[in-house]
Image 1 (tube, rainbow, N blue to C red):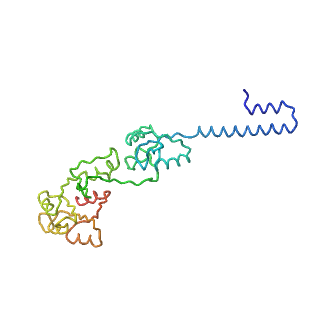
Image 2 (cartoon, rainbow, N blue to C red):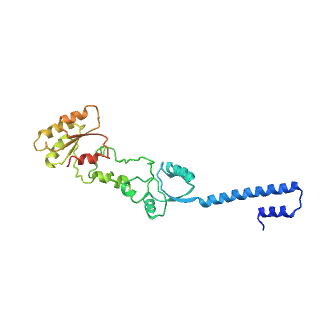
Image 3 (cartoon, one colour):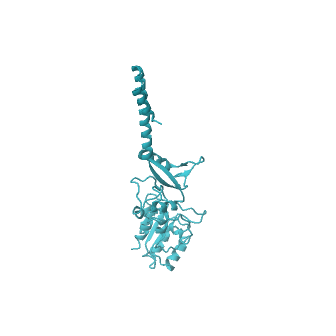
Length: 274
């Protein structure tokens, strides 16, 4: 069967039609040509679109499946905009976070959203040049079981997500606790006794202790020849003007405010161990 444009061409050449009919035939030929061009461009666009395989796991609101079964969240929404600009066709590959990170390293998928940056990971994967999301870790515990102190985690069983940057990273919970043999005291009196029996390398002193406060306990430590050379790092949730001066006046060697900055706390403590 002849192509539509060919049929029009033959009609033009074979028919001794009046000029008006020739005009009609030419117009039909032009319309057919425009349709063919449009179809060709559409087909070319479909061929040119790059299929990008994206690792997917359920973690609302970052990425999740909504009630209608559609993949959504702010990561998929941003990827949709990028895909439109780059002429990508996104194909989501479901699995756990760890499974998809393994697939990414193996080349089984092309993109993995929701991956925190680290120097080690940057040696394996290519990261976007702009951070998309700032994240932090939170420790959940039964009421009254721990306070805000890292030291309270000593001896506790902690459930973590395997491979998470908050677990394995240079500032993750394992790194924060690594290298510290932590002993804890619930009162100033207990702490003073432990300072004698355990001879700690550094003492993190909570100023807001029940009963005898941390300031008085520090005075006693610094007046005792056995404990006076042990560095004392004051920790307080008050963070009022003049608090740092009060702690230094009673003999504290350093000062941090609570909640503790987990990004720098371990380094701060380690600085007193040199």
